[in-house]
Image (cartoon, rainbow, N blue to C red; front, side, top):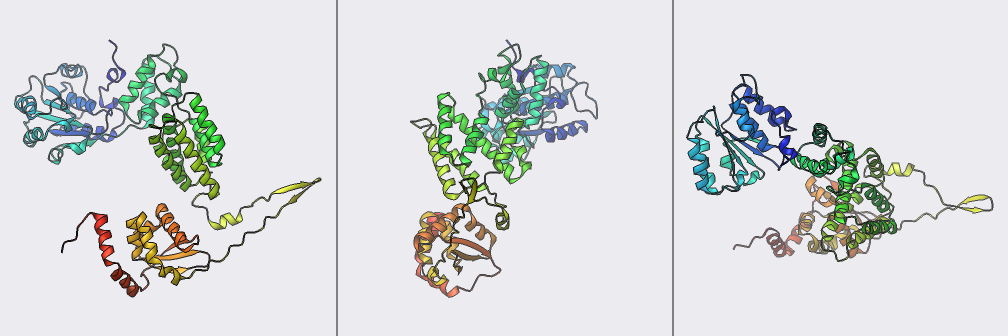
Length: 530
């Protein structure tokens, strides 16, 4: 029977371990100075090498040829070979998932640890998925961890550290395993392909890395399946039998159509995908992944390293697209397509959720006049930009048509009128957001400008930030328009001291004291005690 790649190429020295340098360095220093601990706790996602690291540590402390100042096992002595072949009597591996009870812990660990090693220096207990132990089993294990025999070492491994009691954690040296970087994973896969004397297209290895999401065991398992497809060079088309094909070029086409508010082309593309049998769930995953990539690039180009790498042409297209879309539209797109991903699972017409999402996005862009302007663009920059005027031909000459300038009518609304209906504003907002209404209750409007700008002062930054939140601001401005009949814009101002509105606020508080108490009780789930 053929051995799977992740077992065949399991690291036999610390040097061969991919990533986890923060853990390797510490453990190797402890081995070199003979200051190893009696208990270790390895935590982190699956497939990152927790069990492998535990076996390496067990092998290193029992290696017969390892000298002072050294940390690597020799892999040639009887002790190393026994542990490598899983036949050492002094290294006990226990799967806590199938040994959850207290009796198993007492018999397999506590009682066994009292006996000295048969032929080695340490008796090592590797307990995998330790979070599966019962509470009584943990309590039984705790006493042994508190006062362990000098010849015993315990290495606990878990993927769910939050389920391990704090009393256990505090008695172990804890090491958190991290996902492996794409670069390290790619190097690892290339090395294995070379050792196997196979040829694989680079794009195939890149797809494996992207699907593995930092998990080295998943990456090596996928590579094993792909290598079994052919004895010759494995192409991207062949690899689609194992890894679903990605359509990033079509994803970018769709995003470009959305930026241009071209609903017709967008829907045509989606239906073409359906006709070609493309998995829309997978396509939406890729779409969200690319939109996230664009989002991080816009925030800061250095953040691109936290996304999956694509080929050079696609990266250049993404860089161009990122300049033609603003952050607010981008985040809204991501929100919409995350919801679409859930709706696709139960849609009677497979492509309908995507089609509706496309129409929503394109309609909003047309109404909002999306120009791709970033949030850093200032008014002075926009004023300096040259706007081309439409032209028509008359004979051989082109005549420029001057568009009539739009005159902004002044809004006839006074501050006093706004204040008179402020309580009505709060009651309407409360129907949408209790917390927002509570914040505004202690902040009165301070100015009403003729251009429709309503000024509200704040003393504390977190109050101002709450109002400036996009959804909160939109809720407030919609309520204001419904009540006053004008499209008012809210402007928040920071001040050292709020205007003195004590009398007015006190009157409002007395008038609405019962309602305010009820609101607080409703928000925080309390009850009134008299």
